[in-house]
Image 1: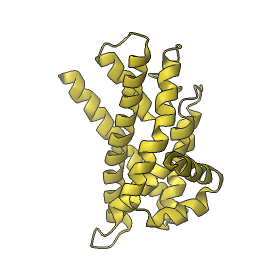
Image 2 (image 1 turned 180 degrees about the vertical axis):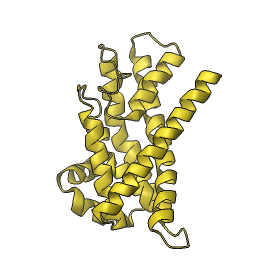
Image 3 (image 1 turned 135 degrees about the vertical axis):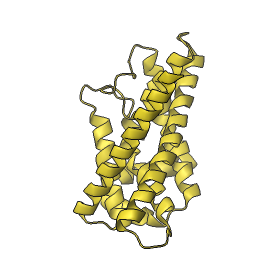
Length: 202
């Protein structure tokens, strides 16, 4: 029943995103966490299965998001190449870990950005609203991130939906939304590059 309810919410997020994001402003962090832990498994499991049939999710053009790139890297680091159901589950679990880790990192970055650039002196509810925008905006990736495509279409779709979620949840103008989104992406990209440099150094 929980899965059906969350799937219905995911469908509304895709079909009527603007209205749905406005309604989601009141969501609790726990409700949002249930969403990612329910809907996120769709792409996590299907991409794990497809990977065993030869789909290369280490290629950014195939992956629906950074979580799959993280999972492909994780499987490589763990030297897993057994081609069985265990590897599918490990890949799916790594995708879910990637979803949660990236959501937390993005939430912190976005909350600080929105607070510093557009907020008031107190931090207020920025972390909760940021988490809602990041997670529900990622719905296209949760549902269709497993689809191999040559143009990073699903990733761009998810980024667009996250931008729309940020606009509606924070009640931003498009100008403020673009500033927030580009700053967020830029900072997360720097953090990613620093993490890669640190790993390579080790």
